[in-house]
Image 1 (cartoon, rainbow, N blue to C red):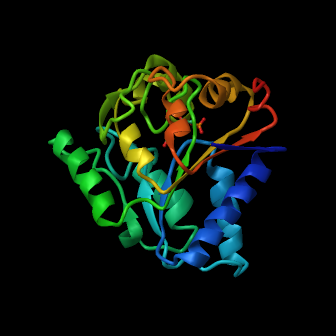
Image 2: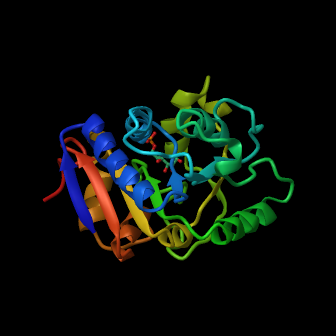
Length: 242
Ligand code: F6R
């Protein structure tokens, strides 16, 4: 695992956007796995800047979603489909056809999860997966104690994660209890993993991810098992590293 400490979130976003641009120059139709939440927004802004300045052509890129709330209508502004379309697909000038995501509105959620794992494999697998990290060490919505071999499936959010995400909704009561998330095993199949963590609130989870044992209690520690994993942290998120 490679750990890169940057000054702040903007610098982290720029660094990762350059890595994505380099990938797209090598592989025009790269499949980019994207996370939602606040942390990756500087990446998407920096990548959009590179595209607009002509530094990279992203028109062949394909985008895959990491997770999705169960039960939110697809058009709900906080469904992760809406967020990815708004923050990534539209700014990069891509069409919805370039986008893959799990169906959080499916009646048969288990079948939708299996279908999503199949769709990712049929698309040739994720070339570069962007990850954030929860204060409890989750990646995607693999909460502590998730199997490190897990596949895409339905999970129940912890109270902590629902509280963390309540800022996107009118109240915590509106935050769904269930999500579909790529499993840790699914995530580990991506060719390159890049986790960005910013702010002091992530410092403990980052320290356990990077320096703790590989353990289901800290799902992000599974990155230690990956042959090409990069953890980009700002100084605050790095503050508990030895
Ligand atoms: C969301 C996701 C989550 C977030 C994590 C951190 O797609 O994968 O694991 O990355 O909850 O969220 P923020 O970045 O909002 O702190």
